[in-house]
Length: 348
Image (cartoon, rainbow, N blue to C red; front, side, top):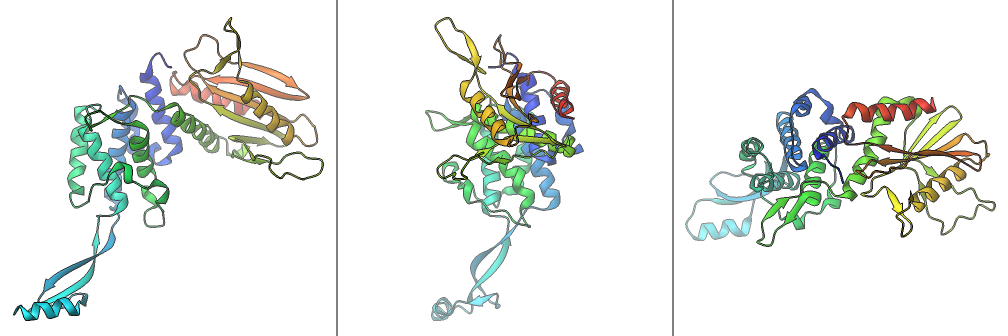
C-alpha cells in the first residue's frame, strides 16, 4: 500500500502518541531519532519504555490467598489440616493468609507479551536485550496463553488506571501483529492490519483536534434523524467520527483508511469516490442541518495510498458543502499536522 513504509512506521508512533497521551512526554522523545523497519520493533520500544516507567511508579499488586505450615499463628487456622499435623506429631499449625503479590492478570499479559517479543526474530537485538532486562523483574508472574486472554473482561480502577496504555499496546501486539506459524511458533507481522490502522487513524485525528483546537469542541457526536413524525424505530444510529464547531458553523469529518481509496466502476477502470462513503457523509450533513442554513459541511478525510489518482474535491450538494481530501501518512509528520491545521483554520 505504501511505497516507503519507514516514514509511515514513524508516523504510527506519532499517532499512538496522540491516542495514548503518555507517549508525548520527554521519556519517549528519543524514539523520534531512531529508525525502524517494522511496527513490531517500534511497539517493542514503546512497551519497554512504558513498563520501565510503570516500574518507577510501582508494579500493581493484589492480595492472593496462601497456605503453609507454620509454628506461629499467621492469618487464620485451618482446623482440619492442623489436626492432621498434630496426629503426625508435628508441632505446627496449618494457616491461610493473604499476601501481596505481583502475580496478577494484567502483569501476566505484560509478561506474556514481552516473552513473545523476545522470542520473535522481528525485533532488533538491542530491543531484545532491553526487554530481557525488565523480564527478569516479572519472574514471579505467571505466563498466560494468548488465546485465553479475555480482553473485554479487563476492568480498570483508580489503582490500575496507569496500566491502560500498556495493556492497549499489548493488545496491539498480541491481536494485530502476532502470527502463528505452522510449527507452533510466533512471528510478528511487519505492519498493522487495515482494520487496526483504520481505527488508529480515526482516533488520532480526533485526539489531534482535541489537543490543538479545543475551541472547536472536537468530539464524536450523534446525529438525530431529521424526521417529520419523530418515529425513529429501527433506524440506524448516526455517529460521526469527528465534529468541529465554530459559532454557527459545523464541520463533520468522516475518516477513511482503505488500501484502495477510490472505487473502480467499469471495465475501463474509471475511478470514483466510494459511493457508500459519499452517501453517508451527505446523510450526516443533511440531518444535522435541520434549519437548512447551509452552515453544516462534511469532509471525507482519506489516508493517502500509493494510487496515482486520489480523491480531492469540493462539491455543493443541496446547499451544503461536501469536501473530499487525502492525508498523506507517508510524509514527515509536520506536513500531516499542517494539513490538519488547514482544515481547522478553514472552519475558523
